[in-house]
Length: 421
Image (tube, rainbow, N blue to C red; front, side, top):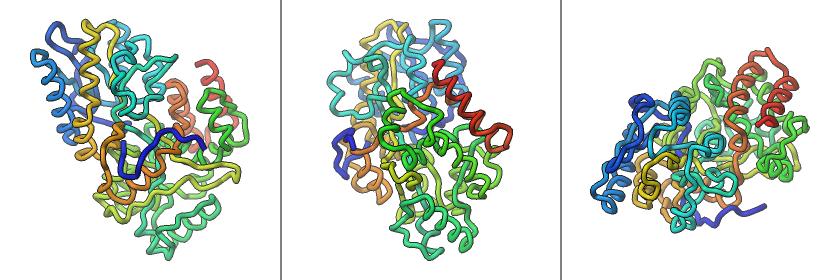
């Protein structure tokens, strides 16, 4: 298995796909002269306050006469607002992006940053998610992945070994049945109201289904939507619902944060969560106790698969091509990905920071398990898809659960979208 980066278990490195903040319209554009404007969806969050303060302090030390204005947008409107700004050619100087399709679909509006970020290349990890056509368009702030978390206390109550989760899908189903009989808890906490649940399922369960060669081909853009492996993942999505593995009302349950609240409350034994910021090790540990939060690899559905941790660069800041001073804006991006700022983000928000020099040795067993898998992890399957295909997949996933579309029909539509992109 290819090693993506060298990490020790004492080092860790996005933010979640969710955020909130006061809305500001597209007219909150870029600053002029002595002002830089930043759009994101996190700067209004209390857990991100120390991170933003550290980043601003780092930038102010280098550029004392320049004001930085953060405009926190609501995440559910963020990319629509950004799209309006891009169409007008006016907007913020610096923008936050999720890694993968959301950034790659908008590189025409961004400046290549590799010449400005040379000194940060070795310190930071997760560059692949912010790279397109040989250019880097954002500096990674966090790493984001999709571990399968489980509740060790429920395992114990059901008479199962909490340190030995099932390695195969059949054994996993047997454990789920035993847990439900003993505790009444569902197997999975699942929310797909936003159509995001299928993304987590694809990336969380897929490593146990796809053989390494097919997995790597998928990430490289050579995707066969008719293959038995890909079909099996989407069949499992339907079968899990039909078998009653999920909580009730998956299509009416919001992932953020209702799905995670179900897991926090001990009402489900497993959840495909995040590595950083919300729905993650720190959040779960506060409710269940850090000692009760387990992390397991994807159960083997296909004996030829080789499960690994699915992760990528999580979020990163890029620079708009219309900014008046690209070097100054790029320097702000460097401050937003500086070690002191990311240390604060890790400590207060539980972000798995992209900075490989940060020591997280005291973060608990779940974090240690995640960090141990980073060197051999692979990019998440859903991150390789375009934003348009992900949006379509969200709609189809809801229809699959309601029975209004077949797996074959859904895969045909997804193949057409993927190929068109």
